Every structure is written in structure tokens, then in C-alpha cells.
Image 1 (cartoon, rainbow, N blue to C red):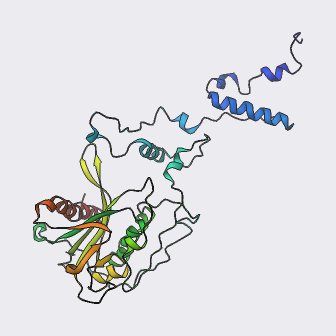
Image 2 (image 1 turned 90 degrees about the vertical axis):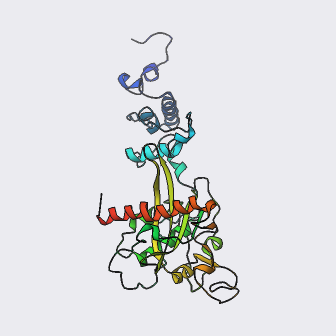
Length: 341
């Protein structure tokens, strides 16, 4: 029996789109979106299709993902990862990054910097082949022993240029042939999955890489430490070059984060554009004079300084670089080789 005063399609208008037991769990924004979709379908005279309710990803997990905040009474005790970065880290741990976000704001996009090219790392493999390998050393590279025997000046600085990090990894392909670099090449600092690999050119005297291929710093780029330790490996026959980050752990204090170091020789540094000499030295465009560590002006990065162990103002940074390479990095390498826990 129809009620007087109601339109003939009252049953359609008053019937809930979802079962009553689920209606209370549907967000208000989604109800409005559903009603808008229903009106559009009615306008084009399409048959109405029932569909299950969808809960937005950020609404489903907003009460169970505890995100670190930088707002604390003691800023020195703030976690290393906070805000959006920790939010994205938690989503990766929960496996949520592979699920589409139905909201109009996808916070996962904040971790994908805009690239000027659509070429991905998967479709752009390394086009630069490392130079011919020398016979593999019979054992892993050995740092100075005892540690107190090393007192050379070290070059230390910072850069955000991913081309420098890639060049270091290519050096490692030659000097650490038994080390699996797949993971390192997939996690080069400041290179997003949608970015193309930096272009590298090798020559007998390549221009300084960090100057030749500067890339404007993006908002989420990190400044990475670059360190060069002359005559560090194998009784002083090979140098050490690499990059690292020191992060703050709430429990352990300062610890080694992203890091990679490789042995190398001077000729390799020139080939990859990782060294700039003083004017008139070998490798400099102004002349072909003497070479050697004593004539090196910059190594690895543009903005850096030579640090002396015996200089009071330099000792703290010198000691940090030395301990990172001789203790923290070597400990990590021993774990990889299965020599300790």
C-alpha cells in the first residue's frame, strides 16, 4: 500500500545503498561519493550495480600506525625518522605501499620526486661497463693494523649528487669483485625508483664529476658524507673512498646508517672524475706535472676539506671518518663475510 504524498520511487530513494549493518562504518565522504556516482549513473540511464564498501587506506590504519613526531621536549632525543618519512616507512613495513589509495591525496607520492624522464631504473640498466678487472686479490682488503698506525690526512665533505655515489659503486665492481652489489645499486641515495641513472663518462682524465654534473637539490634529497682516506688498504697500496650517513638511534645513540666504501687507486679516481688536482698537477687541464695524494685538491665531492689528525680543529671530524671506515664499516663487512656476530 503506497503512502499518500510520497513519490512512486520512494522505495528506491529511502533504501540504503549498503546493508544497514555496514552503513555505520562507511565514512561520510565515501557516502557522498557513492551518492554522486549513483546520480551520475541515473543520468546516463545505466543499470545500478551493487558493490562492497571500501575503507580508505589512511582511515583503516590511522589508529594503529604510530608515527614519530619532531615535537618533543628534548629535540636531541627526537627519533631519526619523523613525520611523513616515518609514516611511509610504517606503510612499507605493513606492506601497504602495494595497495592503491582511493583518497584524492596519496601520501605515498611524497616519496617519489618528480623526474624529468619517464625512464625507470628497471628499463635503464647500467650502460657503463667497468674497466677491465685486475686479478682478484686473494683476501678482502685489509685496513691498517694496528689502528693507531694510520695518521694520514683525510678528505671529508658532503654532496647530494647521486652520480658520485654511482661512481663509487662502479669502482667497487672492480675492487670488490666478490661482493654482491645488487642491493646497493637498487638503493643509491637520492635516486627514486622512477629516476634514470646518472650519466657517467670515463676517460683517462675525466672532469671532476661533482662539478661537471651538478643536479639541483630536491626537497627530499639528503646531504651524504663523502670520505677519502689515502693509503688506507693493503699496507698503503690502495686508498679508501666512499659515502656514509650517521643517524641517531633512540637506544644506541649515533650509529652508521647508509654507507659504502671501496678500495681504489689513483688511476681509477682520475678515470671516473673523482679527483681534482692543484693547478699544474697530473690530471689538471693546465698541465701534466707530478701526481700523488699531495697534489690532490678535492676527492669525491666539491665541498670538502682536508682534515689533519694532529690539528685540534680537525681532529673530531678526522676521528669520525676514521672510526666509520676502520671500525663500523669493517664490522659490517665481517658480518657479510660471516666472520662474526
